Image (tube, rainbow, N blue to C red; front, side, top):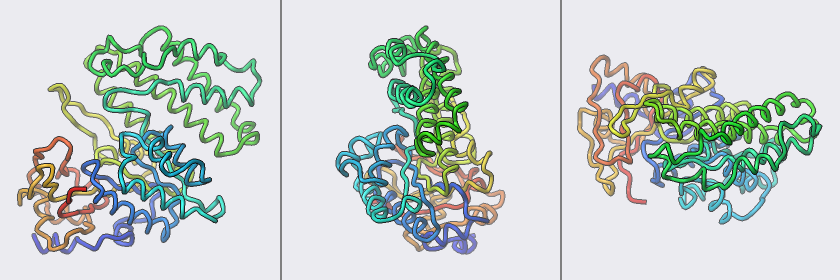
Length: 400
């Protein structure tokens, strides 16, 4: 079996990744099994540079707040702001401090310098404005959508005024209270005001769709695309807040599902614009259902990758990343009977694995699942091998 596995391994570069695929996908997604390790992000940067320069990919989408991502996109396409400002205000989850993320944004900006608009790289965050402790106020997305429409359509068509939105939203800290994650009674998501906002958001999105020919002509395709992002985000946030206030057993399943649904909608919008590269946790990009335990209860939902793959078919490809050790986090040499253990026995420090050939070589002798001693790292699920187009394996992750 060792020989069969070795034959599936190749040096890590864009050509090796693309050889695994039947065609160049519209969305090429690279996953990671943990966050915050610059070794993984440096490899991502190198692969993405090659795919941009050699294969014509024109958008890079990261697991980061989609509204904040507009700040990065403005910087890399037109030089708005400074790199320091962009890394502070354009990347969510605290990942703007990453040296590798900073280098990616700097490189995108420099790549675009002097290029015509049609050849410039675009940046997108595709996560919702969500953190593990809660969700943002819908104010930014709702007021931006209303403002876009108010200046361009007959005022009689608008379902409300900006003042009405402001009154219904109230103070932002009502929406962002972290206590609501564990205590539904602290959420305003099912208040009368929130219910009215959901109806108004739906009408604003419907008006945006109904006025599409006029709006694209009056502004631009990019302006209309951005307004659609406001609409998706507003309706997604209000749905998320609704379920934050729910007390049924389905509450947490709805919350994790809504987040991945928001991700999927953003990825499909990115794909409609042209070939794109995507980077996020493996669990958000896999084709199989995602699972986790929270509060002692099992959760199961369809990931963003599963939702996108179902619609794009071969237009979506997913390459997972696996690793051997993160010793500074207590993740030591993998058991030899795990997927990571089998790959760790290869002589290469990093390689690209043909996942389907590996699954064939293993046959019905599925390796044992690797149990991680650290909550921040997720091992590959052996049963998911066949659902991946490839695996990038890195033997050891040094401390960043």
